[in-house]
Amino acid sequence: MAYLGTTSAGLEFALRDELSARLAGRVSDVSTVHGGVRFSTDAAAEELQQLRAVDNLYAFVATREDVPHGKEAIDYLAALPAQIDWQPALLLFHQWQHCREDGMTSSAAGISHVMTSAVNEQQPSPDRKRLRQEGEVVTGKSMTGVGVTVTNGAAESNDAAALPETAPEGASEGAPERGRGAAAAAGSQELNGLPFRVTCHRVCMKQTKHGFTSPEAAGALGEGLLGIFPAWTVSLRQFELEVLAWIRDSHLTLLLALIYADAPKASKEGLEEQQTEQPKEGRKEERKGEDRREEGGSGECKKKVKRGIGDKIAIQARSHNSERQLYSTRPYRRALVPTSLKPSTAFALLQLAHIQTGHIVLDPMSGCGTFPLEAADWLQSRISAFGGDKDLSAVDAAATNNIALRDAAASQSVSRAAGANGDASERSHVAGCDSLVWDASALPLRTGCVDRVLCDMPFGVRCGNFKMRERLCPAVIRQVARVLTPSTGVAVLMAVGRGVRNAVEGLALCLREKQRMAVEMEGIRVDVYVLERTAAPVPN
Image 1 (tube, one colour):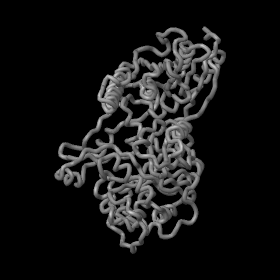
Image 2 (image 1 turned 60 degrees about the vertical axis):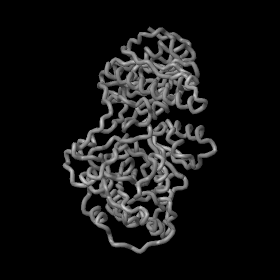
Image 3 (image 1 turned 90 degrees about the vertical axis):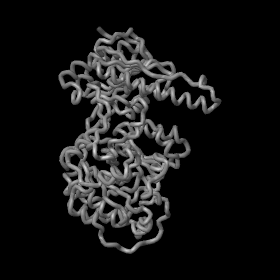
Image 4 (image 1 turned 90 degrees about the horizontal axis):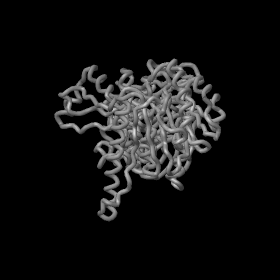
């Protein structure tokens, strides 16, 4: 089964290494693309859901490198679905949904049927006509990043923004095999009523602005899908399947979302009500309530809230795939701040620190505690992790997350012990981390008492401003050098700005720069510094 796992651009190495370690001998065709890793494996969905370095996993469908840049792309995209073999990706989608629930809905239960016979050409369904008439029926949003031209209105922050620079090895290219789309349509009678949507993300890195919009591209692909699966229905809100089209210049990658936000089950009366037209205010209100994923330092605590669209509606619409990531299942992800770091990014940076058993791990600007909590969740009682922040609400959020982590670990430990011999006393030590209130520019810690420091410093965008960043970060770096153990201490710092570069260069005698790498965080280019503490004293 072919997958594409996404991660922040520049941190693909962590996912690639984790795949090799966790799926040794069971993973093949591994290739790194911009912001992700494509691979094939027969591992179960339950096992893949344990991956820590990945933002999200998608079923890989196909890739093309010859997407026209002008309006002719619409006809190209409308004809493309009939040239692609959708069966492997649909089968993978079925398996993941079967894993997620106790069984698939009746509309998608027949995906595993071998699609081998052709069907006659059918007249366009009402949904196909709507796709051409209404640009909003199947929508798309554009992306932004470093050096990116925004091509369709306001850019949307989305971890799925990164696209392959070139087509991965083994991708579908050239003249398509005839009859693929017709053969796939043979199974559509077993997919009756499958509600789907197409979401298009576009980005122009090297070329000029596209001659088409994201909604137009998504609508053309949706029309093509209805041509081979005429029994499917278009639904932006009550969809069971989301098809993603990522267009980077002339490169197109087609994927199927495997992970969806939970939606409560509805009564028959509620379902009938939900199918009626709903006010635009309700739609906007519902979309505001999902988990927000932002990077940076600390800030005001924001917990996850799901808002309904009215007391009379008994069913909540399924959320867009970008609002449900694989890392959302982390047990400690309960209370967030506006600049919460993604756990997958924290895990990748932890790999650069080479943490050993018995190490003391510190985050001096921990926000809601992602770095120490990820270290504690991953390495458990083998290390001691703690953090601190000046913002009281961020410290409270970290404490809430720590309690959630301890409760989840205790529950799993009791279950394992009871399953083994019925003796709950066999459970292992439950790890966690402490969160303190302090000023990171004047840490209340002894000199040379910490083995590893990891810190996501404020970028001056969502947290603070340029002047604050240039004043605060150099002072924090000096404190990091002071508290690290001489000769063996390591710091991994994620920051932006000239002030940080100057501070690192000014402390070169006591902090040797081992590595510096560029990473894209929600469209912001940041630097990751790996610094080794030398035996030299920190200058006054």
